[in-house]
Image 1 (cartoon, rainbow, N blue to C red):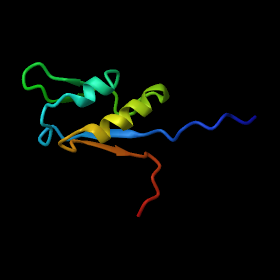
Image 2 (cartoon, rainbow, N blue to C red):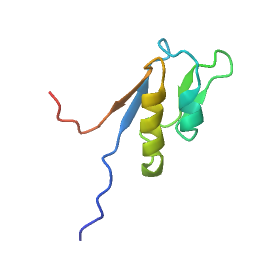
Image 3 (cartoon, rainbow, N blue to C red):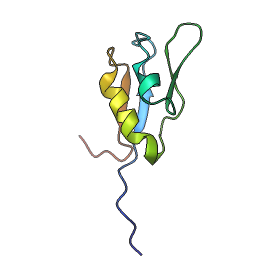
Image 4 (tube, helix red, strand yellow):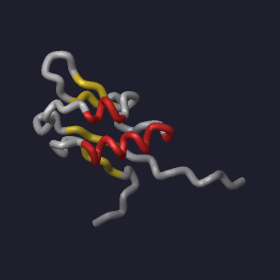
Length: 79
């Protein structure tokens, strides 16, 4: 039985030391990111976002002015 092609799952990571607290991630993908109440720094809610949230998560990675969000493919074969 063949399944429709699904986008490759992604794994996100954040560097809170690098985060500038701009909030673009939480605004772009609120199902995946939040900001803490004390410092306004990124909080990663779902390191492996559901397929319906992957596009927004990818956009948030690109919009982060501090480059504090990394996107990795769990099965990456890059060497």
